[in-house]
Image (cartoon, rainbow, N blue to C red; front, side):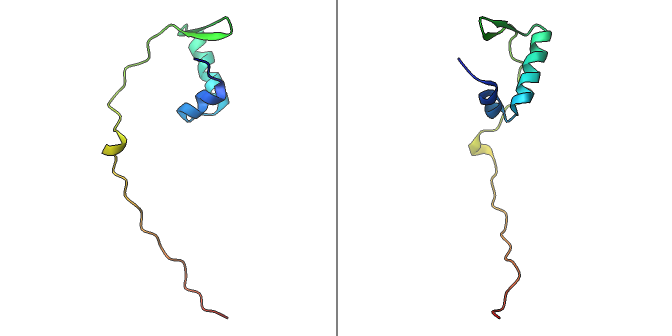
Length: 74
């Protein structure tokens, strides 16, 4: 799969520079290697700490909308 740093950043909610720093760190510890212009993942991803709630499980409640100050015509 071909992904740019920018595309990876959009997927995880990070900036391109943060993605570059993370890839460099992963490379330094041997979790990924650069091969033929691509990255090869050598480590398994970490196990999730807990289960992510699905969209249906989330409690979305609308915040009350406050009206602005009343204006009198001049």
